[in-house]
Image (cartoon, rainbow, N blue to C red; front, side):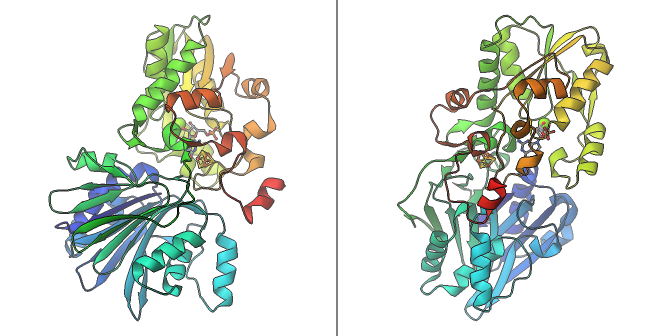
Length: 451
Ligand code: 5GP
Ligand code: SF4
Ligand code: MG
């Protein structure tokens, strides 16, 4: 998911709309904006892309200088309307709107506890739990948010807004990114820095793990709600999720991906292919890096139809299968008679690579050498990326040689964890889906893992 916030900014709803548009790659299922005019919070949300949910008249009707918005990609919780964010509560002490990116791993335990105390939930998303926990604590809003952040475990970057204040909070492991920047009139907050650049803002501040930032009375205040912190930025943010123009923990995503490509090429000294191609869009940077290092021409061997959403987001396997075919076509004049190095960012179920190798061979490629710009995914993610359950992960069931055979590649190689670390220059990473080392307790999700 992606979150965006605007504090003391003219036309906050419109600014948030542009912000969400730049974060659309983080979720296409649903989109929503809550805006405060200082006294009341109004909410608009719906299924679909930001451009489809919001029209000019709708945005113009959303008056106010504070706003929070969300683009949704469901991992925990289903796709029903009740789970679309922002989620807004109306209490005796005012309203609260929340937008959340990540996944809370003690969600089930907290839900049961809250229900036993009389809470009634509208939906099944874990974000609603945060709101209930905030409402239930004692103290000022800031104290309540801080206490809540200490009760939830897992991945979360969330924004909470009341009539006149916004709090931005990042989990103590730093699993999901969150940054803010000074704008002309106020502040903007975003899951990724690419949203700032769209607004012509080139300087931003990353929240640190365990940090809460308060935007109140025009002043920004940093505080830690926890000192028990570590650094586990999701490696998949670099590999696949984030936009190439974003900077995550000081590292530009495109630069990271180019580095992975060049590292892959470094290990391929004896491979003499004719061209290097990437699977658009997320693997193009890595393919450029590979081509540069190997001295083999980078070519456009595959064209992506931009009007099909991200393959992975489609909820059923049948829908996924169909959309891979609609989405990518080989350029036969480029690939015919060629020995090809094909770079993809990751293999999850193996669907994409298998299809593409077939497409390339059908179009006349003589050899297809597949290089994956990440290690083998062997474990599920419980921190907000849908890398699926263990029984669907091809890397959990097959050896690299078996995967090579399954996808019909001539050769296949993945990166190692050490190479990933090399490409991020020592940024602390979560690599749990590659090595099974989760940085939190998994609570009820442990069962899924032990199956
Ligand atoms: P597969 O087809 O092997 O199941 O999935 C791998 C492909 O899905 C890659 O091409 C990757 O770009 C794409 N993909 C889409 N969404 C995700 C995601 O959330 N995580 C990962 N690792 N890959 C994804
Ligand atoms: Fe990211 Fe993988 Fe860690 Fe999930 S398990 S947070 S996808 S690195
Ligand atoms: Mg891809």
